[in-house]
Amino acid sequence: MPTRFRVTPDRKITGQGLTFPCAIGRGGMVEASKKNEGDGASPIGLWKIKRVFWRADKLDRPKTALPATPLHPDDGWCDAPDDPLYNCAVKRPYPASNEEMWREDDVYDVVVQLDHNTDPVVPGKGSAIFMHVAKPDYAPTEGCIALSLDDLKQLLQLCEKDSAIEILRAS
Image (tube, rainbow, N blue to C red; front, side, top):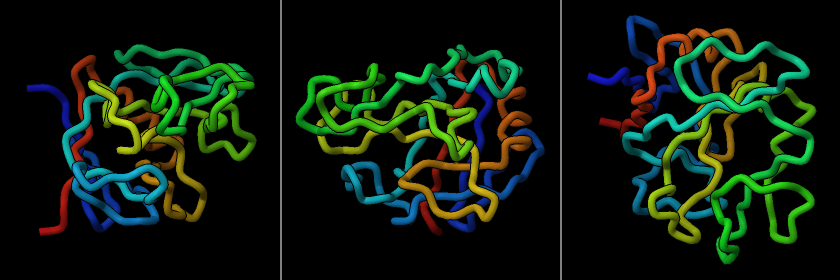
């Protein structure tokens, strides 16, 4: 069975004998079918981990079996629902709205792409749903899951190519 980590509404991520605090979206958790661009919600569901990005100017490549790509200063992620590259990596400057991946606040020093709204991409149903580094106070995210850098690196060491994150609804 693939490695699976579960995110619970009480802002914990568990799996493989580990439990870590995490941040979730400012909009709480929402059924994936009700997820909309900009709602700040973390989508409920099972999301395969696709790949890892990291700031090679700050950190060594994370130890993981997952595909990993170093970030570059011109990397972005399109969040414009009407653009053909919605919810895809782009190079900046890009003509449509996009999120800057090369950030100065450290939260994208390690970024893990989840497969929410990827196959197929549905315009407006959410973009850039990642797992990334939490702010020191675990402030809510824009819909992502966020862990401390050390916890995220530890979790990635346990991931295999078919690992997944399951965001659970409140019971």
